[in-house]
Length: 390
Image (cartoon, rainbow, N blue to C red; front, side, top):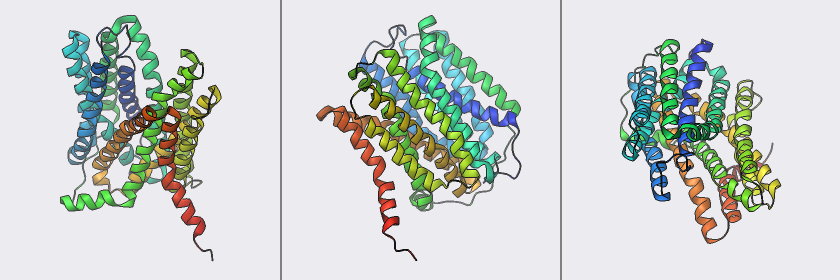
């Protein structure tokens, strides 16, 4: 669905840097808010509320800013979001204090809601149809790098200078990426759009070409969030130390990062279809969660690796499928709504695991989420096997 020309390397790198910024900012702060050296968050209730504030802003605003990108152009929304992220981060870096932390976190979530879907829509608009898989594979790779480095570098920065140092670095990062994008990303004019009613929008959201990849993206994010949140708990129960459990989570993120560009190339070269790859990814992630139910460090590590591979398969293929099935003038809204599905999976996966683990055990929580992920692709495979052959 992109133009016939391949964008320059500077353009591609700037868009990937925007994806890295949203991932690094989200996880870098979230993973360190409860650290003793952060010095500002003193209760679990406050911690939970701060985490929900950022995610809540994204859930509400991503479809809104995605539609705005279709109306005025993705570049303007991208640059405005990065500038707002820098401003929100700079507020706390300069002022400090609990009240300013709430304001900064809300502002960061709102700003990320703007430049995240705008960046993914520009990836789709600026790349030709034959490179959609590779483009989203690279974009997903750099977001995974941000998710991986966020907790690590964020922890070092908070240890060295507290939350204000971390927010200072985020301010500089957003300003640098914003300047880079302003110089490298071309203006992509908005395309004429036919007027659409609420009923037309409802029909579009109910189409299999939207529901299938969006539901898969939500499932991948649910598995990723549950793995990041609960595999350390399983690791401690298996007698693993803090370094070993942190390494297990890093295995999950690293596998997802490595697989995404390869999955994108396989899609572009015809060696893999989006439907088949997503089916394999859901079953692989389900297998990873099933392995996490096994006792001992082997179950934790195998669960992390398979969950990472599964989510790494799904993410670029899901976004490429959405880009290929969406009119170019509606890409921003589609990407924003798909990001909303991912946010719901981000919250729903850990919630499902936690609710079942509370009444039974963590193994049953993993198993429940694995069944949810495997249900649809397993049913599809059974129907295909039962279909009469000529």
